Image (cartoon, rainbow, N blue to C red; front, side, top):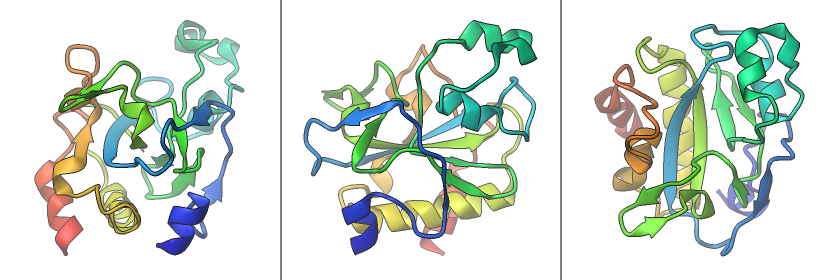
Amino acid sequence: MQHLRELGRFRDVRWCPSPNFGPRPDPADISLLVVHNISLPPGQFGGGHIEAFFCNRLDASLHPYFETIAGMTVSAHALIRRDGELVQFVSFRDRAWHAGRSRFGEREECNDFSIGIELEGTDDIPYTRAQYQCLARAARLISAAWPEIDDSRMTGHCDIAPGRKTDPGPAFNWTYFRELMIG
């Protein structure tokens, strides 16, 4: 936990640094975990498009959808691929650009105090067992490093940006995830 809290990075995880981050207003204020989903192109899995997108290297000519997101500068702290591989883009000590306009409880601008983890997936296609297992391991390590992040402070993007975002969607099994957290 000391390593995670001091360096902001998981050990033995592929590091794919994104330029899309900034300093947190209060580096000690990390108290929320936000679960997202992403697939590029939408509904398709595999390949390096997500990494390219988070690192501002997505070739818009490869797919018509990519033209609609060209120029966006977004990131997440980490991505969990369908096979359970964990890729980290932004140090947890920094503010990734994953939540956008958002609110949790009485606090706005969740990027300031949250960690964002993307699952390669869509709202309506079931996530893989490997993804749930990896997410539960990651969430346990994160909550051990930042104890303020307990079960009540692990939420979906849809919950902090209702009406604007729907992920991780109805396909995400919160009950199963929480069982893995305690198991």
